[in-house]
Image: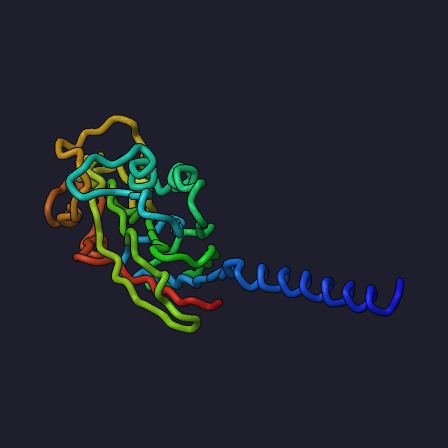
Length: 230
């Protein structure tokens, strides 16, 4: 190879490398975001079942006010088992659950990681186990705008799954106040629709109830703090 040919080859090689570099610069940069959730149980005597959390798109809806609960939601709201909800969310960006019951006055943490994109939504759900079918959570909260180190606090309203009559009678509550039945496929609540919970029936309201005044619930069960950590 003569000197002129060598120079042409070097120039051509540099041009090819330059084009490759330009192609790399044009490739979209994928950013993975990680969120830490701290769930607080602020009730007096209502343990939370293991807490489910998911990052998802707007096609995922765990419940809808005024509409019948899905079987997966019913199973969680009556017995505290969130495995069917987790399965239903398996094709979404991320889903996780704590392992233990969250006792009143305590907090628990779990983390979720997913590709950061516009409209990245968060949902959280857990049962109040000293009830027939009460649950709490938040749904379709947009977390895509959180910067690293930034947090948001979300209150946890209390909902009625509308699948089991709120008698709070002996044998009908899975939590430690009763140790009774959890999920039952039969739906005996005439509403058969998710609503805000009207409040549990205690012994002060009905002698057949196994619940005491401390088991009563108001309009919220606690809060969840969402922090983007990466």
